[in-house]
Image (tube, rainbow, N blue to C red; front, side):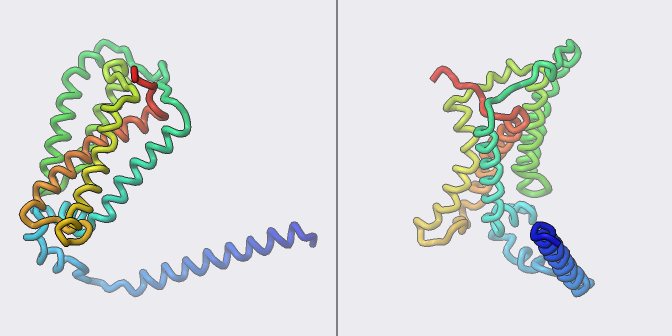
Length: 227
């Protein structure tokens, strides 16, 4: 057996051993999971009055586990920056649907979608909903416009577009570090302002998430504006 075959054989055996090792660890972990466990439910319920919202999911995502959510918003923004670096935006003309029925329908459908997005955002304070769900719905309206009326969006790489894209991560980061000025810790929102702060974070994040997903669908960076 030559050296090349020995090299491939060694790494093949190593890969098999690693897969078996991690598979065994996963099986052992699943085997030892208790049949019933309250987990952190009791702790979440105890601190709900301090969360500023009535929905446990929103309280966890924007307050108790806000650090993870902040990173998720940052990762989405980083994905857009990656798309910007790859190529300029190119909307395939064959993708545009000029059907008059679609053109008529989009005039009524897009405003309704925007209203639904706003409702889902508001719903996050006391039920299932929030910025990511509302942002995804808002992005759906943008995608429809890109397909039916791409000229109506006038996507240009301008100050206004950049502001919309960064307003979510910016507000989230600002509110995360603001408590340090009052002697607190990161993401330790003031109890008397926590509700309004979470609402502002979600509202700003909805805009950024919606436009980010829409631009990721379009692909690449928008053309330069007049500036």
